[in-house]
Length: 222
Image 1: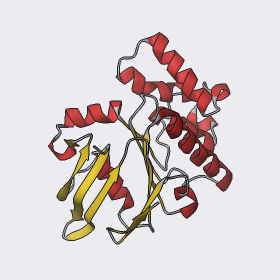
Image 2 (image 1 turned 120 degrees about the vertical axis):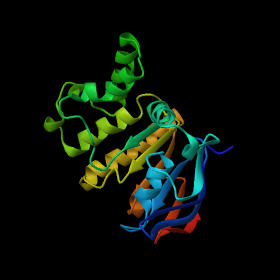
Image 3 (image 1 turned 180 degrees about the horizontal axis):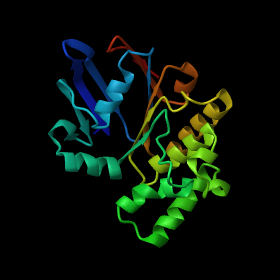
């Protein structure tokens, strides 16, 4: 069974279909890029895959479970425990330090303090930010903020990581660092990755590329 499946997925806003008849599968540990120009439906599809939105046609299944049939409480549980997300705009909480941002998902899951502290230290070390643990987001560079966001997304050991243009607000050197981390850390943890990007260079870290145009899959391959 695939980790993630979309069958005939469509989404419309008013009368306009922004996605139509999308099929895809993602295997455990696989990195898949959704590649295409702005406005082609990439982020809309990612929101459907993560259960943040519901399709108007077709279905999305995670580990065989139909997300459209899941209650809000069940979707929240899945996002806390099995789905990690990295956004273009980082979305760090400005009143929390780097360490506190990473530990927040684990606090919500009720991890004991000793286990939580070990996990956060491990993650900050993995993204090379041990020395910046007590820095506020305003004191971090864009690349550092995104590395904190990657650590936070991986905190609970998710089976699937969803990344929406994670290098879109970074300079080229910082972007390359974040992409290398995403590839290395998903390889190390066995998490699958769905990466939304308009950059062929970013997509190159993935095992497979799915090209979208005007809300449809126009090409898929390795």
